[in-house]
Length: 224
Image 1: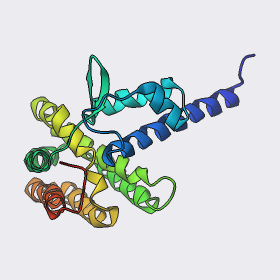
Image 2 (image 1 turned 60 degrees about the vertical axis):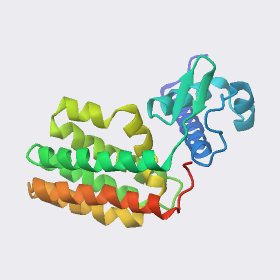
Image 3 (image 1 turned 135 degrees about the vertical axis):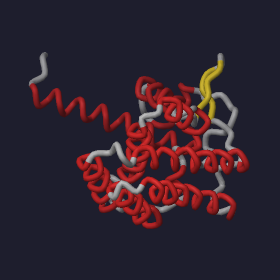
Image 4 (image 1 turned 180 degrees about the vertical axis):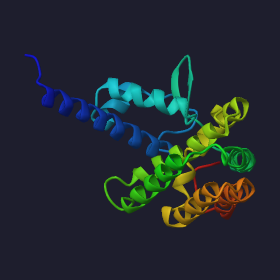
């Protein structure tokens, strides 16, 4: 039986919801060390535990591999081991790279870009306590990627999006609450709106360096 237009759209949305659910649960398992670092992931066992088929599971595993949270060998996928000093070094590098990208992006971002960024954060912040809580996290990723793209430097972008930097970066939102970062994001956007690249650079560096303080405080137990 052929599906009608509405049924097809609803089915597609249900698949996307399942994919996101599996992806988010796996990411949570990595962060909480439910998936032990460096131990091969047994897909049959994991699919039974999550109550899903292997298709959405493999899709989610592939996405997490791209983000640098999982590694893959001949034996399959396994969770990456996070080390404190590695994470600190990565965020120090990020602070420099993304600060530079802000300075370079300032003359290139359009009014529409900046309106989109601000709207994205305001809407996501309002949803932070709802079932769409991960919207803020996704807005954060989109924000940083848009600035990097607007900088217009392929080497800078490729370096910032390398697997090691990307993998550690994707867990940033887990140890800085939206209420801490919301104002910081708006300040960066305002500096970009004023075409003040130097101010935007300093604000971005400060924004990322505050994550290092949280790491050094020992509040977060995701590293060895």
